[in-house]
Length: 519
Image (cartoon, rainbow, N blue to C red; front, side, top):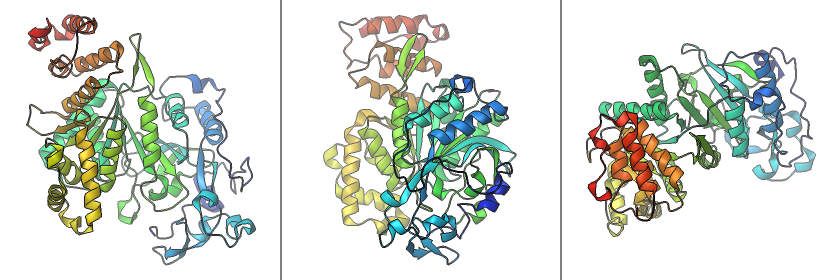
């Protein structure tokens, strides 16, 4: 079990250091310690701040802190083991740990010998309880130029609506025009410098020109680190005055140095040390992300806890509407994939199943390259033997871990992914006219929209406006005004065409001319 005995669940003396205004001891919870009922209904704060759409500043006044210190513990929970039972593994320091992964001293005293649970096997459904969260506020990265962000520790069962309310009403984030979910390798991987630069430039361009939120796993490694560095480099070299919203959704129980984030009344700020040398099997948060949602299921050292909640939150956001120039539009979502292993394959499969378009970056390695290599083949040619061959090429170091049944499982999932070609876009550098990742993202969104019968005029209009924001009306022409789309009997094309033609930014662009067959 990961973790060399760090005091993740701090004792009163540690808590006193982190929160000097709190005094000794833990907060008094409003519910019985062993009350395993669900979280109470969401309670709205009466504070005027909670209704304000004004962007929150990190060095805000007492009203914001008081509001957060009241609203968050009332509405957001964490999870905590209430029954210590020795696990089969030891900690890195040789100490006995509970089945939940935490040390004996990281449990409350009542959890050591709870009479009501004696003789029973440890069961997370019974022995992990929700209590008010004790980690939220501002986050200051002390070793990298005092970069700041916002963070919250949430139960894995938290309703997405509660998190969305926190982000938009209490953190003050503007509702996004686009949601970009970036997934892939969680460990550092080698990507060609040119492809890396193209990816970074395109991703930031999308976010900057559309007001998108970028969501990643939030750790200082792999694709998450690539995204963070892209935002950092853009901010340092650009005159852009806004903030690119980069949200890291990570597992609380795998965050290194997370004890410094604990303070029942909130930290403004919590000082966080990004220390990769001592992280062991845990992970540091990435200093170039602006917001963190740390998902807690009551365990320590267990990766992947955040994935179900992240999926639910992204789906919830994509179902929200935003009024733009008098038109109510659902927020579009695109999944961008670099490299990755089995978890990434599952993420792509789930995204495609839920109707989310995916952009897979060829040349980034592993899963991304396996899918890119077979994406244009007929399903009948995507055989078990072909996938086995591709895995042996792109998973050289771990190929021996692929059992026969696992290869069959991968083949079926990849076949299902490729069946939905309208939702799958392969970014190939310099091929098929693709030069920029931002264009591939736009293509993916528009291509997917063409196959959705429920889309109305408002959605098409919004997508055309996004195309203009990218200054790529040629993409709108190729993906929207196509021969295979039925325009007869509708004023949609006529209205959209004249909107494009009359838009000021297109006066000097010959590309504004649409195909003659529609004129």
